[in-house]
Figure (spheres, one colour):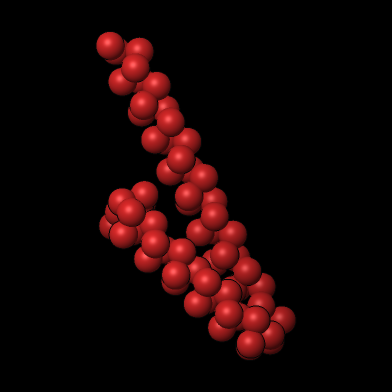
Amino acid sequence: MQNNAGMENTMSLFKRNTTKKEIETLLNEIQINLENNYKDLAIKAFKDSSELIEKYHNTAAINEKT
């Protein structure tokens, strides 16, 4: 049973890292667009990242500490 619990924790950690990377990628896109003065693209990236964060929060893929 311990192996299964350990494997579940590993999968959970892997999924959390993937989720975190997706969010970081979108936040980086916002920053790049702002630095290059691409206002419309920055606004779109902000909306996309907000939606993604809300989706992950609602499905418990992330929490306040993540």
